[in-house]
Length: 414
Ligand code: CDP
Ligand code: MG
Image (cartoon, rainbow, N blue to C red; front, side, top):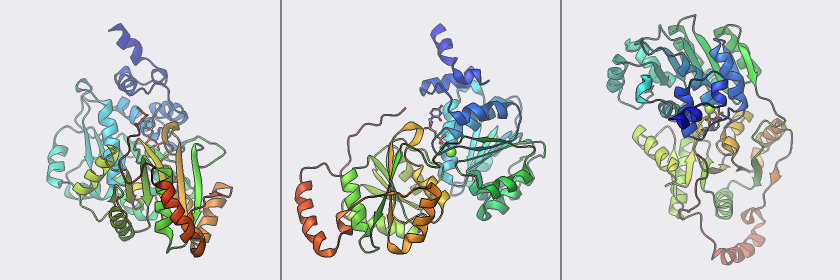
């Protein structure tokens, strides 16, 4: 008994978080707050509006979940916390993180409201006790229009991946949602990237926001090694396979520009024997959830995805990110490669670039403030050379474990 009490007290308790939640953190071996948690938690507990920027994988989720939980009054049967995210996968992930902090005694009820799921079931749940809703904008607006959600008692609104939520594509929807919440609410914005215009715009919805900016020399995570593979469109797939075979990812995400390119690459790599599946917006919700589960369980080793997987996803064991198609802006680069190298783990990111991608590559390198290391692959060599070396490579690889078969490397986090 005594031991349990001691265990529940840790550095999070010093920040003002109750043992009800810290004991759950201890179970996950999370005992010291990260810098963004250290700075944002006291401000949020104090009732301040907060704009928080910190690198990918540095614990922004608990930085808003813990203070939010502190503020929920379970005596009241109202939605008091609202978290809005750009993708269904992220809404689901945050809901799971939240549920992981709850116990039967906590009495806090959480609902995920995102598209592709049965609306009627969500409506039934919304009629029961719900204190926190985690939603994507489209489905939440749907509920607002049907009159099936009441946001008039929301005391804290969180926009995760805030710069994307306030970007043109989402802005109208997000504004319509904000209008449904009371003026007196507390507002918190979190992201690894926060362009100046977004900070400026955000002030329209916030009251004297306090800025939390965990700065460091590099905009990307230091423990993620980054490479460029110079290739041509025609040889790109071969180059990707060579890199995969060489680096043997435990889990790897391969980003493509469009849903069709994801599907095509996935089919072709499957045919070559790789343990791969796809994630993008044209799949049924059931399939999206099935794929994510298999990837999280490491039954799948490679995930081909659009940018739907670029933001927020925290999958343990992602050792590699491959930008099969080059990201077209710096934010996209930062978020995509931020799927690896999380919570202090090491990672590697490979960006494939053809000559026509040179402007995007320049944009990325100037954003990073340095030239990325080039990774040589055989298929990128002149044709005569490559035929020769490819033959010798095949022989050389005969005894190596193949990325095409599930690997046994153990997960070493959590
Ligand atoms: O949102 P952000 O990209 O900053 O990261 P996240 O999705 O919150 O993921 C942070 C990861 O670090 C999760 O796997 C947490 O379990 C872990 N972690 C944490 O959040 N806080 C700590 N103090 C220590 C570990
Ligand atoms: Mg996050």
